[in-house]
Image (cartoon, rainbow, N blue to C red; front, side, top):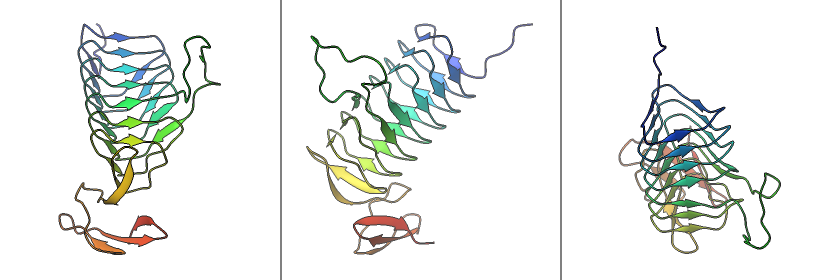
Length: 194
């Protein structure tokens, strides 16, 4: 009796050797999951997604159509990658002087619950904080703090956003109008008030 897979991979997609796909994860049309990738449970990968060698992706992540997650990028749990958003992993690419291999790749960490909008670009070597929101089309060229609302080219913080996704209003002390979570701003950083 053949063992039933606990994940789904569309017949048009490729999954290389030495890949772990968690329970409930779905890989849709024309996607490629490369060697050494580790993907958690209940993730969804849209059409035409490429996940590079040795990438680590947590639980509950959603990667929309036409996204490439290159080696050196890590997604923690519940990260949202909007359609056609872009990661990089080399700071100065040159065709004549190829830079292949992990010694050339800059690490990029996208922390728990962060959302990266459609067509956003995350320049390598920068981290995006937990529950941060990078707007569609923004270009991240610096680290992004937890709960930051980032817009523009280059992306700048235009406010704060709750874990639930509601934009926070006020100054220094914030209460989310949707879920009632409380936050405090100190030294240009936001933290949950517990």
